[in-house]
Image (cartoon, rainbow, N blue to C red; front, side, top):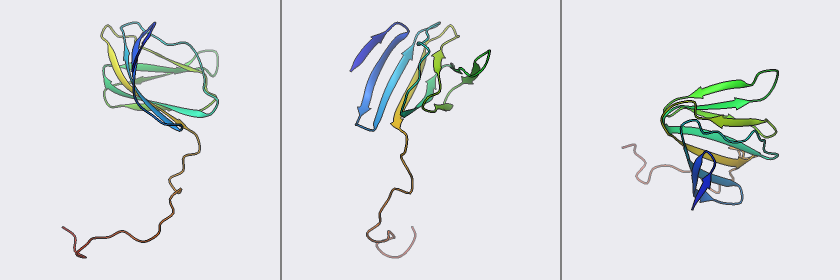
Length: 120
């Protein structure tokens, strides 16, 4: 579902109670508001163009410039925004996930392997 924004638009590609994936299309000079999230990570993965993610921390924001296939994660509670400083549109995947997803959160009932016991 496409949602128009002041900076361009986003399409929700996947959504569950713990994860949401959107494709952002950010117009030249487009930027979102300064904001933060209480309980979720916000990861940006650049598909096309160059995106700048800014985090507030001191007198001047920390700036992270991301090119093609680069990614950056903003942790919960960190005030941030994104900006397209370029003259071309930027396309970005935005992955939002609740904090606390743990790679160790797997409960095996048996072991995996190969059906014939040999590697291919």
